[in-house]
Image 1 (spheres, one colour):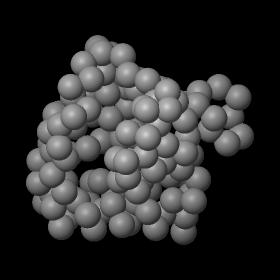
Image 2 (cartoon, rainbow, N blue to C red):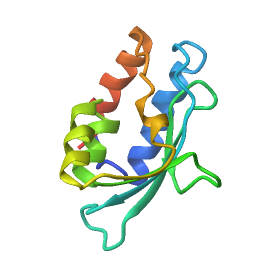
Image 3 (cartoon, rainbow, N blue to C red):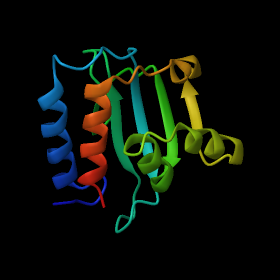
Length: 131
């Protein structure tokens, strides 16, 4: 079954995937990032989400963190490309076009992610559940 990116059902399924790899995946660089996602289909206001990897696992959730290191504003299609498909080129292109903006410690965004076989398998599952 697949769900619309950022829907409640999608977040629930993504959590289940994340929990299935907890303790098995390689630790990722630590970042606390808020996201303001514009142009979400069917929504009049931007979606607020966050990424928190301080546990070593990338946790993408609804709502904003208090005291994030960085806040990124971007459009829905770029967010989906980045956080579902793992397409970091989409973020570079959006930044160069001015459709992705950064407030705070931009150096946090330059940390290389370290995908391992477990993380890559989880990403393939995420792609499979996403419309």
